[in-house]
Each structure stands twice: as structure tokens, then as C-alpha cells.
Length: 314
Image (cartoon, one colour):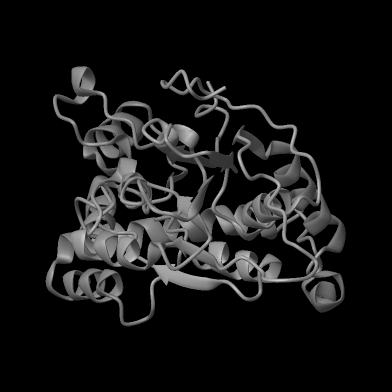
């Protein structure tokens, strides 16, 4: 019905439907769904936009981003959404450009996608029925960043923060005398930047985000080797890789605070941790809210959206 009414765009998801397509390829990268079904059978002429191709469901961690983006173009996607812009000389750009030069069929797919994008932009931004551009580009420097918007998103992040196991939360820092030695361990830039705002003297230990499903043994060993030098370790648990890094801290003399980011499912195997807190994004606001709660700036009221398997968790 919506396609017949001129729906301008559809976002594809990373779910696989083997009973329909005959394989386990996620719909985002499936020619069956993007071209055979949407274009040919349903007559959809609008834009097909992927969900974030850096998500595990798209295969990141098992395939590199260049492979995934190439598969998206071949499937018939018009806009490839990547939440972290690759550098200009990254393999994803050079791979796609090289294939455009040598493969006329691939080049035709890219040109067709560009034409659809221009057509949709023109229909929305030009002519009598155009949608006004807001904010006004001429006023952008005066209106952006939007302070009210920033406050709103930070407030929502704070409302969502969930104390999974209270333990040392809030973390008490003595006003005088020896201060605890704190280590921030994780993979994400915003985790470190927001953590250092709250704990300026903290040390940092960064380990790799990929491979997504398994930690690099030498990095886990490196973290464990220095763990006993600290009183408190705040470790960001954001994927199975970091879940394994957390598990490598069992038995350390340091007090461990697990800061779960995006999905708390990675806390399933961390019942041994005395202190655990969950935020539901990997953005700056989520980490700012999480560290504010750890510091004791407010009392978190969020609730877990899932039931953790271990009975030790509340």
C-alpha cells in the first residue's frame, strides 16, 4: 500500500529469512529482497537505505567493511549507512572505486542509485510542494549545536541508566588523603573521553574492538598484567570481545566496575562482578550519563529491558 502511495525510502534490516530467500544472507545484502522482491515484484522505485553496516548483523567482524559495502551495492542498495565515516583512503572507498572502473555492470548500479537519490532530493527540496530546509543553512552557525537538543538527549540517557549490581556505585572518592588509582579499560573513544572528565587522573588501557566475537589473547593478558596496580577498574563491555576481557579480570585485587554499553546481554557471564551499570548507547551522552551515575551525581532509575540469566543479578 505505501509503495503504491509513493513511499520515498525504505530501510533494510540485517535479519535473514532463509525460508524466503533460500540462504542466510541478511536482507540488507540480499539481492533477492532489494532487487527481486522490492524492485521487480513490488515495483518500489524509491531509495533503499541500509541499516548501519558496522553492526554485527551485517557481518562486520566476520567480513571487512569493503566486502560488506560491495555486497550492498550488488544487492541493489542505494545508500550505504556507515556510522563511522571511513578515511578517504580506506579500503572501502578504494575497493568500490576500483570496481566501478573495471566493471560496467557495477558502475550502472551506482549510477542508477545516484539518479534515484537526486530524484528524491529534487522532489523534496525543489518545486511548489518542496519541504523547507530546516535549519536554514544561512543561520546554521547561530543555531547549531542546538543546546536544547543536547540537554534533551543527555536527560534521556540519564533516565535510562540502570544499576545492575550496586557494589561500589556510587564510587566514593575521599576529599583528602590517598586517592584510589583508577584504570579505564575499553575500546571506544567516547568512553575514555567522558571517563576522563569525571576521573581526570585515571589511566587508560585500550584494546581492540575487532575481532568482534573474540578478544585478542595478548591484549587480555596485558590488561590482567597491570590490573593489580590499580584500586578500581572501570571496564566498558560493548561486545563479546570486551566480555572476554572483563572475564580476564577475575581474581584481581582491584575493584571492578562493569559499564555495559548498548546491550546489557554481555553481562550474562559477569555475575562475579560486584559492580555493574548499564547504558544503552555508545554515544557521548550515554557514557556521560553512565560516568555521572558512577560518580554519584544522580540516582539512576532505569530498568533492564531483558532478564539476565544469572540469578545473582537483580
